[in-house]
Length: 117
Length: 110
Image 1 (cartoon, rainbow over the protein chains, first blue to last red):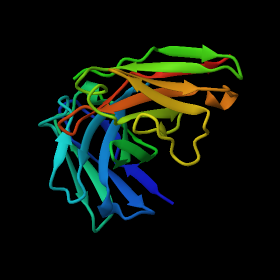
Image 2 (cartoon, rainbow over the protein chains, first blue to last red; image 1 turned 135 degrees about the vertical axis):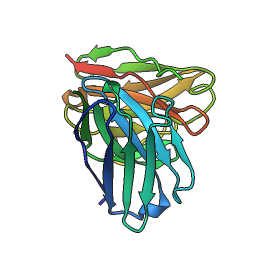
Image 3 (tube, each protein chain N blue to C red; image 1 turned 135 degrees about the horizontal axis):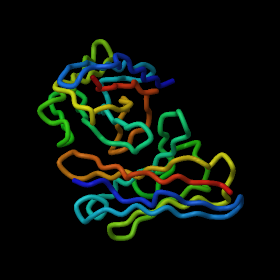
Image 4 (cartoon, rainbow over the protein chains, first blue to last red; image 1 turned 60 degrees about the horizontal axis):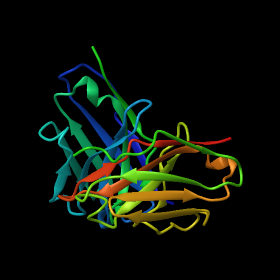
């Protein structure tokens, strides 16, 4: 069955960097767009970024453009999100999700990123 | 781009029907038939319940249905059951390969 497992979350100071990862299994990873979606504690969902099958095209929400970089390694069935210059408002649970025609049909369990001094 | 607008809460008694709205603009909901609805129970990841406005993934009960009129999409849950109590989020394509989510609606089964 499809599994997405995020890792790499943690506590980081404002202005710091962190990379979160997502290990995928149970499907042909290179056939799908992938996305990062975050959820602030007790609040709603926010689309962060997505990446096409090959990794050549990447899209970002305005709130993270220039600070976050999405990437993938199809040989390792892995998705990544490099987050730089982190701000308090980036504190959230970060979900990895499989994207299929503008819907997210499988989600990971999420990894918590806390930006605080 | 702003988030899609949902009512913060909705409620109904078991067996009743409840409809949750999701209002966007002519640049997102009004422009694309890529509206999805997600159900999220506490401490769990979201689960897609409706996609492409009206379609249900396999395994989702037919008590869940979706529709769209202009810039507003709706999710209707018929024959409410206790396990339907959850947060519900809408999403829509928004051009330039972006996606928007709604702020979420907490559905309470009374």
